[in-house]
Image 1: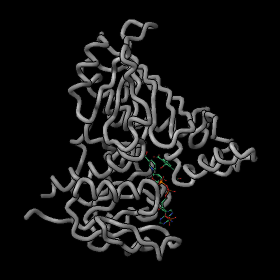
Image 2: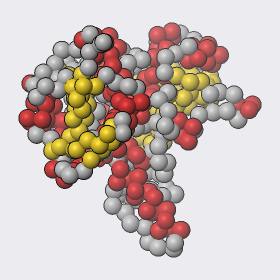
Image 3: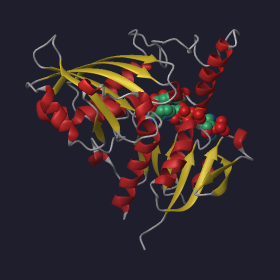
Length: 337
Ligand code: NAP
Ligand code: 3JM
């Protein structure tokens, strides 16, 4: 029988952590012991894995003794505090936060794009931002064929990316408004129901948001090409699950829409949904609950000679976070076995 592994989920009670537990179950990850970690607030709670209740434990620096793989999704400051202790204890950490992504010696991995960066010795592997993950899965085959020189992207991001509290805030605001009541605004600076906010994460000195600059820096690191120019506008929309992106790319050599369609039909992790005559294109309601990246509206950019436009949709909590982390963990144990 092949080896079983000791796995910890750090941030198990959150939106991403819950989905990680579900992904480990669905994909039948070979687990010996499972540790579910969160803050002191969650002690006393239980979470189910394969029909068995597991007690949630408070995460401390001592939590990681004997752990082979730790999946972190408890925020950047919590990763900075506890991931080094997990590595010290001998674990491979797959970190979902932005804490370590741009550290030069830390691999930043999307398994369909740069699996060769995965290592199996104790250390941290960073999981990219949700918006970056789905974009690079769709762009990697185009970059390999025609070399992308520039990307202009606008995102339409679901509230679940902000966590469980934001899902509840959108539900609450819709209910309040339908009842003729003033909606409660706590998570975002403005009402999100029936609105769009061009503001995700904090504003930086260059007037872009941190979310927008994550897309710039992470894309270059994952595609291993610092010459690609990227500009992003990231927007929060009143959708529960599934981020959408309008992606405009310019390439060094000419590639037709038909060639892109053919390339993406063969690409790992991609489903092409592109038949406008039959009104077939990706939407968040189609992608929610799925692990693939859905691509449609593939067309040549009429404003330039060598440009392609795509509409890219994926479940931000699954491929954008939990599934990608579990896929990385699967490659880690493949290397360790
Ligand atoms: P969430 O629903 O708010 O959950 C946060 C989780 O972190 C909870 O389990 C919480 O435990 C735990 N936590 C918070 N502070 C802690 C502490 N001091 N010690 C131990 N556990 C602590 O948020 P989420 O949406 O799941 O996101 C969690 C994190 O994942 C984000 O902050 C982000 O870094 C990352 N993320 C990444 C992506 C991506 O694009 N790859 C997408 C979404 C999120 P309690 O329940 O006990 O408070
Ligand atoms: C997605 O530390 C925090 O408050 C985390 C905020 C956060 C992040 C992040 O910066 O790690 C929420 C949602 C992300 C992300 O993937 O970058």
